Image (tube, rainbow, N blue to C red; front, top):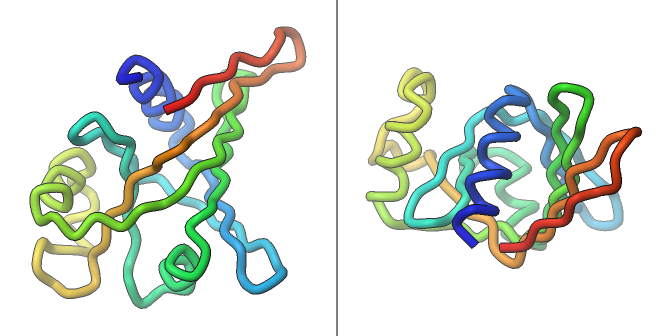
Length: 134
C-alpha cells in the first residue's frame, strides 16, 4: 500500500497544481491545491478551516482529485479525513515550507487531512489506465 501512496504523491508533486473537487449541496466545487505530503503512511493535504472547501469536506468527505504531468493525468477518488494530531500538521509544514508564510501549528485555522479508501487511475491517451488503491 505504501508504494501506491508514494506513487500518487510523486505524481501530484510533479503536477505542481492539482485540483480537488468537493460537493456543495448538489453542486460540484473544484479548486487548485499544491500542498501534498506523506506522513505515517498516508497521503495528506491541507486547508484553512475558514474556507468553504473545509466546510464541504466536513459535510461530505467524498472528494475527487485530478492532476496532470508529462502528458498523463490522475483521477483519484477518496474520503478526506481531518487529522487533529499536531504531529501531522508539523509534518505538513515540514514537507511544504511555503505553507509557513500562511499557517502555524497552533494558529487555529490550519487543518490537515489525509485520504482514505482511495482509488486512483493514472491515464493517458496512449496507454491503458493503471489503477491504484490505498
